Image (cartoon, rainbow, N blue to C red):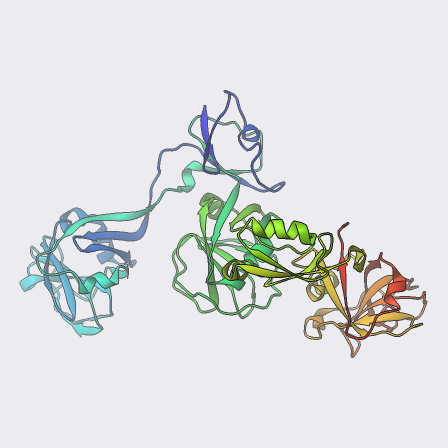
Length: 503
């Protein structure tokens, strides 16, 4: 039997299961997979209709009105209507018969709205009217409105008398919820003609580089945690403590991927199932090009696997040589800085954002000797403290983070590093330590004036923590696993590099 998996046709043996179908495909453990039960297109009529004219196509979005219901029922009669007249106010298509009762009440019409008109108060001569401006007037069919032209508005100034409507058809979705199963059960039986998606593929926009980078960062683990599965969008709130700018702002169309750029929930990723008006608080970051069934059906609490086009282009953590080869595979030139030898470890890349790197065509990679990247272990289970520490160091979005020395001198019992006062407002106190050991990492919590400060303890102490605070003012993070002797030799404002990985 033949099935299609992530856009590629596969031949399976009779009795094959979903496990056989997805062998070799990319998807995260426990993520949901969509299975179309047939290749027959089950169309779902939307509230959008394509009006094809001899001058081009327009899309009419229907309101929830009796006139909209009438329009649905008589599209065959309206089809083949001519442009009866076109002036600065209106374009009129017709005529065709209806059972509309004459009504001379004036209607208030907004630009691009559609409504019915009766020629000479005769419903045998009914017209489909499209307003080109705002006005109030009586047209014999009452005040009701059909809907509004949302796409192809420029055609209203192109169509001329004598041109005609070629076709009227509903805009349909080929992803009907009735013939799609969402499952994690790899024993699910396959049948000929099934279509399977193990992940969602997002084509990212180059003109929204920061919003695209937010998606790349969140997707770097291979999946999204679904925070909402509403009728309008699927949401992901995996990382909302980010700095973003307003970028491309457009209509939130089906399949568009948006990122909130300001306000509550900044960094929130939304994939749209229904068309909605533009919002300046949301930047358009990309478009779903595969796996729309997963967007449509995933529920809050589900895990969905994610791929992006392009993938994230970040060389941090690689050697200078490996970084050069990696960047070259995307057509990007490497400019080595710092330690430039092939075996030096890349600890910083500029620009860091993928879309900016692609646009520029070259990046600088800053290298240091391998022994200057120090391993740490995060041991606390306090998620707020972990979140803060990773955000400040950059470990939240790359494998090697940075700490800038705030205070150090030979023989000091600790070394401290700059934090982020604004981000540390929610560092609520942990249970106080009984003894702070040499090599332990901690931060000053919000109970103390210098909250957010980060430190490493260089001497054991029962009274003071890594930042010099007593137990109630200290939140423990983990352990420094590198050479502590090097921490005694640091200068103020020097930068050290840390990682949780084994290099």
